[in-house]
Image (tube, rainbow, N blue to C red):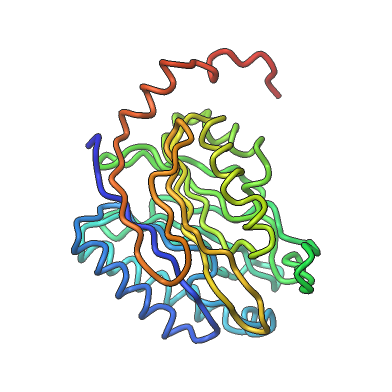
Length: 271
């Protein structure tokens, strides 16, 4: 299938797991009813609350999330990217995990976020993801979907590390998800330019479903879920607010761009 409809779901998640997942299900059903075959959820979609509660309820969050998305992907015959949610790690922390569920309801891809957001970006909030999250150690694989094409995913802060994308693109990847909860202050400055840069550098589609609005304790996320093509064009921008962003994807654009400028073949510096 060279052409298909993509649905990116933009959310304002909070600490109520059941409410968050109900919103996810409603938006997934809406996107599927419009014909979307590939649907992406943002980082922290089932839970965006306190770090303490995240650790205490990690098993519950992961179980409810996997059960819902496995069931609904099979029922609707669609592929879903679960953008990033806490998954218990052996040391008492959690992994920030993304999973792709195929149209048979089975897990096709799993990735634990490598780069953790330990920063002070200037919005008055100290972010220390590593306090509760264990860093992943494995470069994301690529799910070669017979229906859609070759898909992979990073998570949020990974966007700032182009070497990770270079490793992913070695696996014939055509589409990379960047599910995020980008802060408003860094989103305004860097979100669009980084997403377009990763698409241009790697001559692939970038799909970036995002959190939007104000959350617990005044935390603000930027929104603007984006779809970027391999030439760097923005095909869709969700701007602000909770919604589904639907975009038609033509995978032939990947090969067209790589033929125009075969930069990936021209690389001279390899790690």
